[in-house]
Length: 121
Image (cartoon, rainbow, N blue to C red; front, top):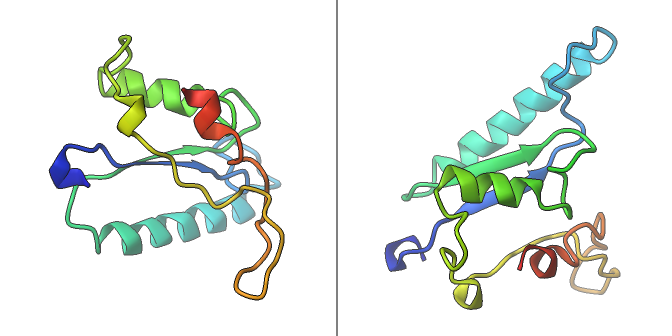
C-alpha cells in the first residue's frame, strides 16, 4: 500500500501510559511505556516502509473516537486542506468494534473503533 502512495499511520489509545509527573503511577507508567515501545520496535522493525504512530495517553480530544489524533496527523503531514486526503480510497482498520465472541475469534476489548472512520470523514 505504501508503494501505491498510501500513508500508513497508526492511531492508538494507550490509556495505561501516563506522561504526567505522577509519583504514585511512575513505576506502572514506566513499565507500560517500556512494553509499548518494545512492541512498536518489534513491529516497526519488520516493516519495510515508513510508518507513524500517534498514541492518546489521556482522556482528551486525542482519544479515539474523538478526532484529535486525526487532526494532528493531517496538520503534521500538511494534509489539513480540504481535499488533500482522498477519503474514498482511504480506509481505517480497528480492533475495537464491539464484536461478540465467536468460535473463531475472541470478543473485542472495546467499541471505540466502531464509528471512528465515520467520525473522521
